[in-house]
Length: 296
Image (cartoon, rainbow, N blue to C red):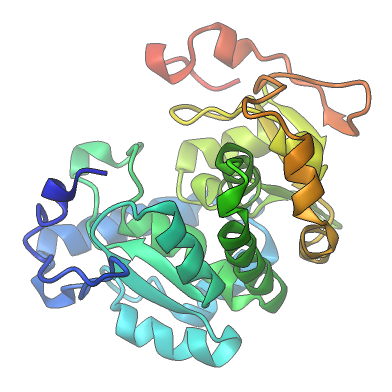
């Protein structure tokens, strides 16, 4: 992160030591509010039947589609009432130790800027739509909210082990790109998928990616894609499983077993894996997003 870029957004005034800022809600333009509304409408057209019920319930509880970019102060009233969490505005990606500390104290850091119209389908850095629409509704669910806090506390304890890549992989394959197996079928709970119309359909319906049951150590040994659809999605049975496995694991010995680099590629399928679908990987082999390939 370049500290010279912290004040690039005109809404950004003073940055606190914990990297929080005032959201600057009154400074959003009409076009920026319209961009939120377009993105919200696009996602609501595709997510029913793909997103998990807990996400859809949270979306309704927080009234995130009532018109324009949400005011954090307003949604925090309901969020604190439900699970004790709050959303805090930040101007950029924050350092790892600051990020973990926020989560450990039930604060979710969200960017205060929104993407440009030409970036509706894809933006590399997380904006307010990804952070608030994608992440915050599930923070209304008590079990998932506890998992997020546990992840933050675990991150704070991990600082001396030099295994941040493995911990990032856990976040990536659950919080950002996780799937959950439900009585209604496989559903999405990862924010990176929920905030992307094209990946929402790809993650559930495409024949290209692997879908493998969640295994903590195996997952933390696995590399991932940061600029394209995932080659593998890990699937939990419930949020209770995710929380239980995470809090019951002694991460100290686990960090000692893990290599500094990943052992498995994003496309790997192991004999020990519980596989829901072994993907064809044809999307990645054809060049993926870089060549504008249609997801299959």
